[in-house]
Length: 202
Image (cartoon, rainbow, N blue to C red; front, side):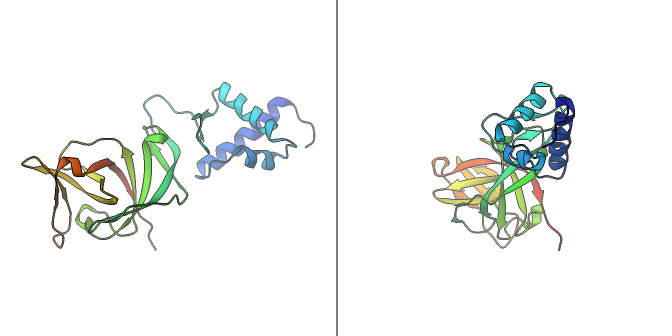
């Protein structure tokens, strides 16, 4: 790589990372090294660390591909969320956690609070969740009735609307072809609430 002033090199690194983030493909340190023509990965890491120190980039410690553009306090920010596999929107089906890439999401939540799942089944079609949709889920307990959640029953996962009935937990479908699933509270674990639905139009 030909010599350029340090500030100019840093600007080039910033523009490359910024453009990749805006395209939804956050680069790794190695990808920055290769794009900038650095001879060592440590050179790329130093430039990225300097951009973080200057406040031009932000990064979540310990997470891969976690560089992001700074945001104004309270505003949503763009981040990469892992697609962890599939979830059944129908009769209960064995849970699958098979990481399958990343999806760009704008959110006020922390990246490690979110994950995405591909929907299988049609039990939530009247709630606007169709087969092959991608649901973005915020991790954590949910108690509010009517919330659409991802729940784990034994080794099986499903997406349903949360309800309650006489001390029981009810997982309610949004399709009249399916019956509600009524469970003891000890028999179900709510993994999180659905905060967004993504769909590709063919």
